Length: 289
Image 1 (cartoon, rainbow, N blue to C red):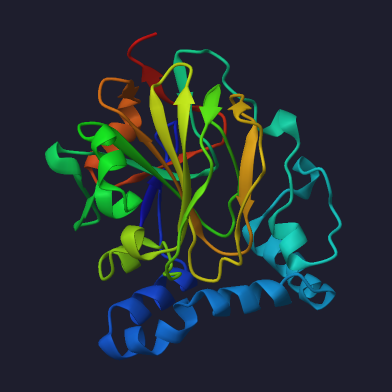
Image 2: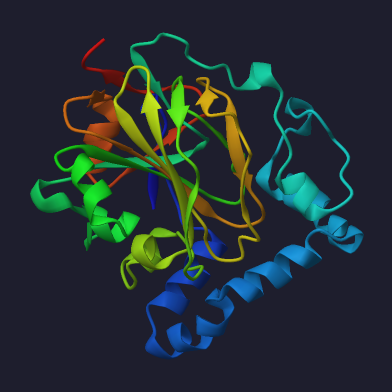
């Protein structure tokens, strides 16, 4: 896999986890073997263990392996692995771009962007989707025809909290039950993960970018998607929620004529390369500002 940061520096490499997932998802027998582990009850069971004190022994090796600087976070000592995984970063470490013309990233992660074509079709990693399949709501899906969809993939070493990308009013949260495939790109080559995986979303009537779709997608061994009980009116950069352990994805869909995608993100996506972004930084510009 290839990632590129906002300065154009490319990272190419495959981790042991990537190699294992590739082996599992590219062989029919191993795909069948993992089916029981994709169910919500397995993720719930794993999440329960990761909330125990016994799980805390895994924190230090993970920190050292992934070179995580705990001084950036509000706490440095944790009673369980999940408490560590859902740690909150200091506000100054994730400054929010407050220019009202700017669309910000809701989270840390690796972002790709795709056009939602006529009839709501878009393609991710050679897998075809429609907005209706993503939302399971044909009427709502039509509002995003001709727009854009940002896919922000979080890996286990990322910061796993996410925020609202603009001021505005939000709907209630909608839950779509499903399974928990990994969101590693290799899985997308064999399963339509964004119409099979468990996900939650709300619609935000934003101040500057029309009606935004804000979605969270659970993945392999994610214990829970935890969305906060917020007021109807929210602010740019306000925390929306967090993921418990596991890789996961945040999706932002924008309507046609609302946002100009940042050139580097658009160009990298066209080449099949993910762009590394941080929560609160610019990923697009409003067209009606």
